[in-house]
Length: 279
Ligand code: NAI
Image (tube, rainbow, N blue to C red; front, side, top):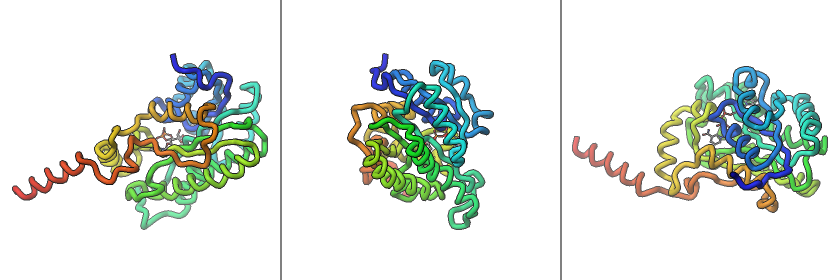
């Protein structure tokens, strides 16, 4: 039985597409910790995904469609969520990412700018839209917590990550800028979690993803953080135990971000050098 860290709390979970999604695991973990939730995703993802299965596992959580780039959809989502859950919200998970350039394998140096705008709108500005809507409608309780998911490509270059790197840098910047405003206005917290590479639909679409995954595993003293670990970290950030944490990008990556090189990577390089020397 999980600790009831979210007993009495209400929240919205964006982005549960299928059982691999980080949002899927977070929805399960939040409900297990005592929360009542609303599930949401883009209308097309709701048609293609398995959200009703997840809803059944989450005490029949209401499912409300919303394209995170539409202010109209977001207003409807927040208003209906407060009604259905019977009070203002305590937490929101923004677990949304999509790059048409990545999907179509268009290289960064030959980008399509319409696609680039879509990447930024869906993957970063959507957080601003969610926060602005919540603030206007006064949909979040004081000390509420908003968490969005990021990746270390915001700080360091991973070439296959393409324009998603720029989207993550913007997402983290919006977290600081809006976190400042929302903190003073309503004591609402806004943070990003910078997660290890994780096998999901969004993750696997990135070119060279398997190599990222194995490299990160070898570089991280604790190994890669799983989606379940990420879900538990989200629950802790939604809880009252982290109420003074805001405007942060929190690395949840087994130590990857602060490791220069690991002995395992050195051994691999030495082995490769040895086999090249022998050939
Ligand atoms: P996922 O593919 O399961 O989730 C991405 C979600 O974004 C999907 O549910 C999709 O329907 C939703 N989405 C796309 N366009 C939307 C729109 N216009 N409106 C509303 N929702 C929309 O993959 P995953 O990995 O669970 O991704 C969740 C978040 O985690 C993303 O922000 C991703 O960049 C981030 N992340 C993922 C990592 C990985 O290796 N999988 C590593 C670090 C961060």
